[in-house]
Length: 427
Image (cartoon, rainbow, N blue to C red; front, side, top):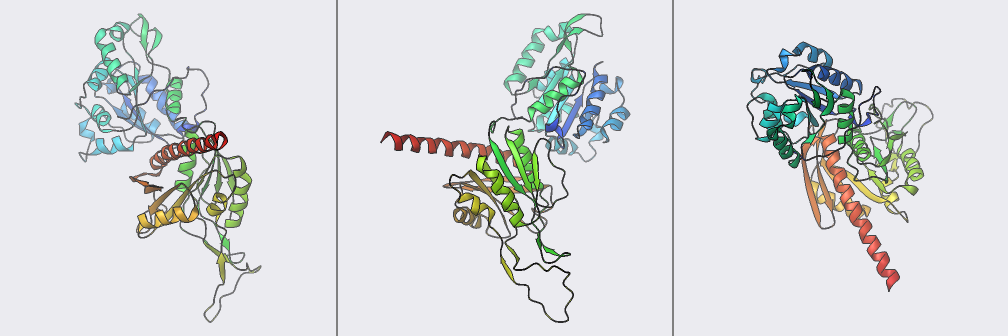
C-alpha cells in the first residue's frame, strides 16, 4: 500500500470545497456495524461532487444496510463476497481501479485482519492487492477501541501509511459514551479531498497547454489532429492537486474544465502562443502538453473553397513553435515538453529535448489505439543523463507521477541556479 498521512477536516452542516474529488475513483468498503447507515450518506455525498464510487461490503454489512441502497446511490453494482467475483479477478480489477480506498465503518475485526495482512474476504483481499492510499474510519464500542489489541493494530497500520480517520467521541448506540463513533460523512468527505493535495508545487504558478489546435483553411474547414486533450487536462489537475496555481491554455476539446483551474480557450497555434506569452512572465513552470499543429495554411480563404475537378495544392508554412519560443525567453520558466511518436520513441525523445533546449520531456507512442483518445497512456521521461519509463496506466495516475518528477527536477534546477548565482557573486 502507498503510505499517506493527512488531517481530517471537522464535520459540519455544510459541504467543504470538494474540487479534488471530481472524477476520482473512490472505493468505499462497508463493514458490519450500526454506523453503516452513515456510509450510505457518504456515497451520496461523493456522487454529489462527481466522484466515481464503487461499494464493497463485508458479509455482515448487509445485516445493517441492504445492497440495493448502495447500488441505487452509487449507480454501480455492489460487491459483497467472493461469489460476486464472477471472473475470479474482479478483486484485482477493483484494486487497480481505485484512486483511494475508504473503509467506513471499519470494525475492530477488520482492523485486526488488515494489520495481519489477511485476505479472507473480498474487501480485505482488495486492500492487500491495491497500491491506492487506504483510509479507515473506525466505529466500535469505546471499550473495544481502547483495548490494547485494537490500539496495537491501529498503530501498526499507521506505521504502514494507512490513515486512520477518527474515531469521534460521543454517545454510542450501546448507550455508552466515549471514543469510537465513526466520523460524520462530511468529515470523511473532507479527508478524502485532502488526501489528493500533495503540496509539492505549493506557492508556484504552472501554465499547461492541452488539446489540439485548428488551423483554418476557410470558414468551413481546418487542419487539426487526433488529440483529445485528456493528458493535458490530467496534468493540469495533478499540478493543482500538488498545490500550484494553474492556468490551462486549451485548444478545442469536449472536456469539462478541471475545478479550481483558470482556463483560457484558444483555437489556432497563433492564438495559443499569444495566450501563453500573456501567462508565462510570472509563471514558474511551463508544461507544453498540447498537440500544436506543425504547419498552417499560408492564406485562409474568406469563403468556402469549392471542390475542384483537378488536383489541388495547398501551400503550407510552419506554425509558431510555442515550446521553443517559451524556452528561448530570458528569464524563462522551467519548461517541460511532450512528444507523440510513432517510431524510435527513445531516440526521438532525446533529440526533441535537445532541439527545444528544455530540461525535461515526456514522450509517448501513438497510433494503433495508443495515445490519442484513449483513457490510458504510457510515458517515457527523458532528461540530461537519464530517463524513466512510466508504464501504461490511467492518464490521471500518469499525470500524478509526471508532476512528481516535474517537482523534483524543478527543485533541482532551482538549487543549481542558486548555487551558480552564489558562486558568481562570491568570486
